[in-house]
Image (tube, rainbow, N blue to C red; front, side, top):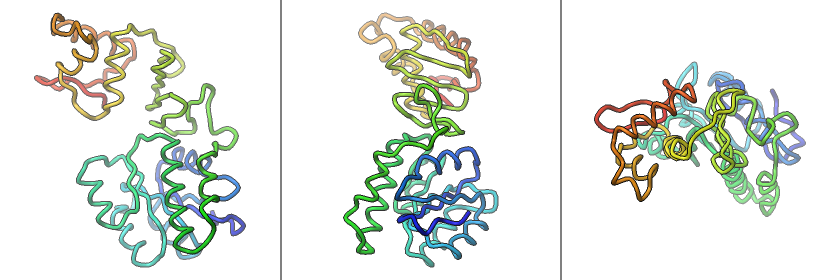
Length: 262
């Protein structure tokens, strides 16, 4: 897909998850930006050689190589800002990406609003470096909304944007949660959770991939009464939460320590 030369900014999205790439494209396009999508490094290299881009959004794990290696090639050849957009959320990965020249590093899952803001920041920097406008064009991203069809009912990001937070919803694969409205879905099925189960779920989801100790979950789940709660009560509450959500593969037990949302 060739970028439209009538648009002021051209963004190249290098992402092998096709639904996610399409959702990103719709979310970032408006009157001042145009996006192009590719799913391999080979295709990205060809597009960069043929079309002028202002920003590259680059995944790390791609079918034909490492985004880190390609990042170095981009920085040697082009005057382009690069945002790494990846599930690789280890501190060593983030540091490596920034040291190799990435202008920003965003880990999945992420907030769509935050993503737009950080893309706008990079575009403003490109404007300033190239002596263009005062940044107002980039700022239009902050007020942008996905194109028609990009949002599901209730404000949940659709089209494969797993893990996005939009208007209070948290989306993770087949799961959709809105803690303020106390709405919890597994697929199309709404699930009723007790207050304790909601608190445990919220702490696990908001600290996804991190192991939370039993003590942390007890303190958060039962608040001032935690000191008087038997640890077996937590085990029972987690089991009920797993069963209600069908989340046996998501809520992992870390034996001797606690639990984590995988």
